[in-house]
Image (tube, rainbow, N blue to C red; front, side, top):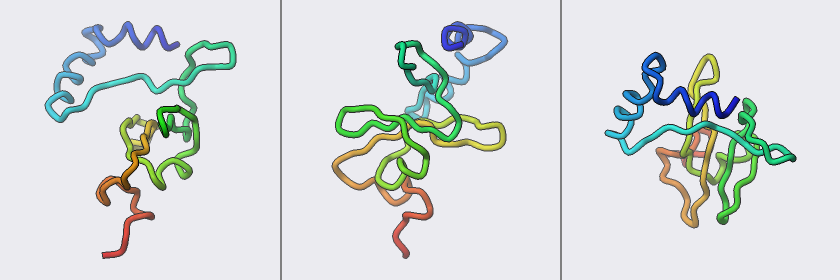
Length: 107
């Protein structure tokens, strides 16, 4: 499944190259949300799961677990809306506009 996705980036039908070029104007790119199975194979990242980088280590957690102290760095379409699928922790707290609404300090 993962290799199929990588070949469609250059496919004229998918228009991904043009979309990636457009995203680059905002400092963004594209990636395939994935994880590695126990056997080491690449598999699609399951819905509701986030790849979380903390202390130079990647783990896989639920959205609620990740977004308390992490900055979203990857998003995907879940069929009805955009959802976070990758996040990173920094030594400093993320700016309020990047924190989920439930954790923003009251103004």
